[in-house]
Length: 371
Ligand code: OSB
Ligand code: MG
Image (cartoon, rainbow, N blue to C red):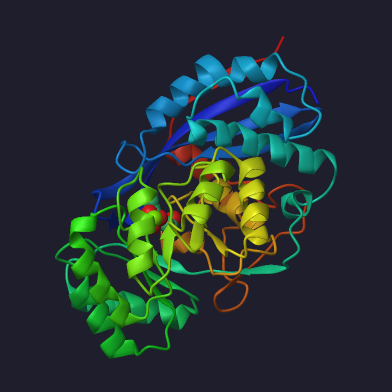
């Protein structure tokens, strides 16, 4: 397929509530939307990078730079027969996975639309609906945390993920178990806030019988996580450390984790995400879809990949109204049943853009023509 034109939209949307983690606090999300035109169809992608380089080294600004200066020229100069070709086309560019994934996601959407199939179907997904959970930031008070959990459980969310950090871990977890019991599916995400020196402390988390603890140690580590996993009965789930199927293989073989949080942006796109899904399936390691506070387009891509069979644990892809007053897609992402989101069956991502909402939050737009 020949890509005729790409539009790069820069938006800034306020979050309904500030999102606080051990990394920092976010009040609004700066992100990019890709519109990719070919043969009367338009494919959509979203850059999920954060406005600042706290979670990973990529930011919205670095994504713009890499997309404009390097990735679009590569795409315009290549023949694309299948979306899987895109990762090879981008291979000369090191890392910058979120920038790559934004464009690659648009190619996948375009390809699905040209073939008249849903993105989920094009990826090999089989689920008609996906189970979803919710990620809850560090709250001002434990009362507020408990209230939020109560509300999200009432909404039907099938996994409660709470952010923890040193000084905010044993007490919130104890309170949650005290109030809601051991029957609720509960996990904790540390976003790399601990080190092996905290081993004795981290072992105390086993008492809470968490589904898993996500990325307790350094963002770039696999070795210490393997040491820690041997000492914990709680499964470790890696997020920040996994950027490719090769990373996933190494982490599994080293024993650094028993579960993988899969984020399309972090691994450079849907093709690599699918590879990781398949690899984990072979190793009997469950995967689930993580989130990056996506707007609707990113959320739609997450829903599509989660329709694959080995996404056996509820992901972080909540309904649009978890984060946004209004989302940039129509319809918005809603629960089709408690804790479930129906996988769209229409061609491509299965959602239209809401241009009125986009107009409201648009900071700028650039057009690139392939001639
Ligand atoms: O560590 O999973 C994370 C959000 C931004 C960056 C990193 C993370 C998160 C979340 C929220 O936990 C996931 C979501 O609901 O989008
Ligand atoms: Mg995480």
